[in-house]
Every structure is written in structure tokens, then in C-alpha cells.
Image 1 (tube, helix red, strand yellow):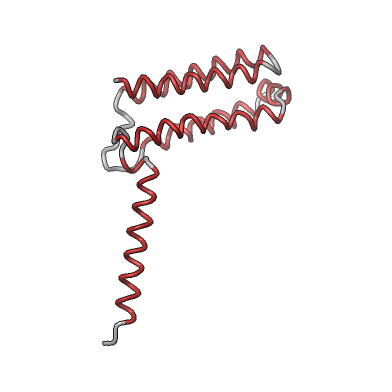
Image 2 (cartoon, rainbow, N blue to C red):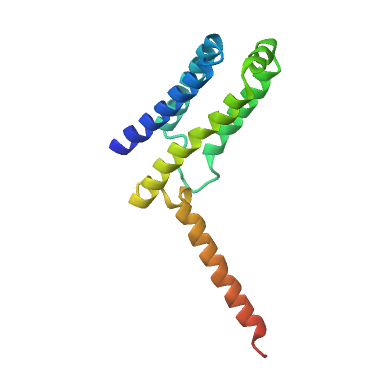
Length: 148
């Protein structure tokens, strides 16, 4: 429970920083961003709580969430309201919004090293995958160089 609460607070803090950054340019757009983030986070939390995103060995269902967000964002950006909103947001704000990745990755890193995060979602999975590939390459190279 504490892990979920800590991660949820990290996400909420990042969302708040995003809204504050956008508010520097336009309060009206900041309100829209705040509502969009709140709805997005609430829907994501409800889907996750339902168990629909569980890792059950099949294809990762989690990929549907960013894909859904991209489709909604593209459709919204093609509307008059979306174009007007995007025109008012300075480019520096769009770049600065990517800073959300830093605290989220730090929390994920910590969860991975405590064992609270599944290995396949952690950087150690990449490291282990690289080690396995290197062993396989060495084994193959040894098998190829052995005279028959």
C-alpha cells in the first residue's frame, strides 16, 4: 500500500508541476490541462484497479493506454480548440514538460531494486538481457570455432 501511495503522490506532484508551468503562459489553458490530467489519471487508476492491466503472460495490455492518449491528443489537436490551445503554449513549456520522466524513473528505479516492481519493468531486465545475449554470442562463437 505504501509503495502505491508513494508512486501516486509522485505522479500527482508531477501533474501539479505541469499545470503550474502551463499556468505561467495561460490560466485558461492550465485549467484545461488540469482537467485533462485529472480525467486521464482517474481513468488510468480505475483501469489499473480493476486488474485489466495485470501482467498475465500475454501481450502487454498496458500499451493500450499511451496509444489511447496519442489518438485522443491527435484528434483534439485537429480541432479548432486544440489548434488554438497549442498555438498559445510556448515551445519551452512543451520541452520542460518532459521533465516528468526524472522523478518517475527515480521512483521506478527504487521500486525495482527493492523487488516491488516486476523485473521486466526495471532496468535490471535490460542488463540481464544483455548478459544473456553476450553468453549466447560467446557460446555460438565457441561452437563455430570448434573443428568438427
